[in-house]
Image (cartoon, rainbow, N blue to C red):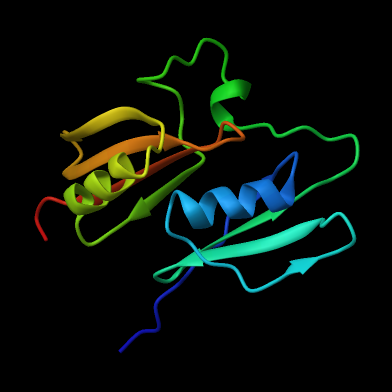
Length: 133
């Protein structure tokens, strides 16, 4: 059996503590500790995915949607795509938590059922599952 690969996106944020607490309280992630005096760094995780967040002096968050000129809510590029077991169940969970869902759940021509959320820094995460699975 081949070992599964993992990835941990690295998001620059304005406030590491507020970002980590948002991911914990709204998106169901966890974190174990902060690094630095600011704090300056944290890793949040949920069910096998990790997102690293860091505050860097003089650097503002630069989500892909802000970098791409004219990206509207429905078509802005993702900062991360997260495959999940059941996108419908997660959609309901995040909706109940009051998360900003910027694209509703739907079946896609690329064979996934997914939806987009935007976090407090403007990063867009798409959560979806394969329709064939």
